[in-house]
Amino acid sequence: MSSPSPTLILAPMRGITTMHYRRAFVRHFRGLDIEMAPFIPTVNAERINPKLLKDVLPENQSGLPMIPQVIGNNADDFVQMNIALADLGYTEVNWNLGCPHKPIRKKRRGSGLLPHPDTVDIILNEVCERSPVSVSVKVRLGVSDKSELLQLIPVLNQFPLNEVIIHPRTAEQMYEGHVDLDAFEQAFQALEHPVCYNGDINDPAFFQSLKKRFPTIQRYMLGRGLLANPFLCEQIKEDPISHIIMYEKHISRIRDFHDDLVSQYESALHGDHPVLGKMKEFWSYQATHLSNGRKMFKKLKKAQKLNTYKAIVSEFLADAEWQA
Image (spheres, rainbow, N blue to C red):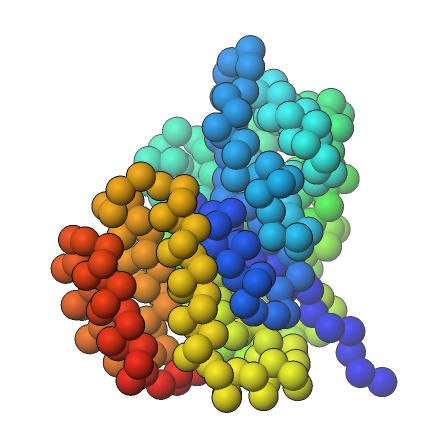
């Protein structure tokens, strides 16, 4: 009897996995099950600025199930945001307790709340009682101390959370070094909630090693690995149709994906500069598995005009081979 297909979730990456990226991705690749949108900050205001919600408006989505993510440290503001998201039709909101960036955590947002279980307790008590949506959380192991998550788990276990998504690094590590699977296992065993694994799923081999070590985990969040290799979900799920398509038309699919994304950003943004900024960040990941990707990225980083950029991409993709 075959095991159930894993649930693969797109990680929220601020400024990268925008609604434009999510729509383009789903049009050109298979295997992704759920998307999580980049975090929306809570605000202390009578009315939430509609611009904050633009990325999660239902009419702007790809068609896949999508979970909004919220970052903040005030229960009233969190509840207010959850009400606004419920009004848009969402039934679940994820609370970001994992953002590792120093300016965020210094304000006791994101991973900055991990060393403060009493504060998390107060916020979750209010949010779970007063919100019209269910709540999940995304965490790291701690800021610098890997035991901080273990100290927080008794608090998390008190509340009816949908899920706990764990990236097994500390915030101070950012994305450096290796994920700590032993620490992940400790947290997984201590939690009374469904757990989703996140971190360093860059190829099917690592995914299979996770499945072997944690056979009961069914949900996985893919971030930088999927940005670098958009075929990764197809490879993990061993989709036979996509397998054939991938190896026959891999570069053409990358080109179509790229062109779709450029077109969306040209329509949404004003002028060459912001579009180039988005697309250079796109290639900082996407060039990883191209045979000439390093050389291409070095050249296109210097482009100041969109037409110049497009010519560079066209030139290099004409001779590129996919290596993942």
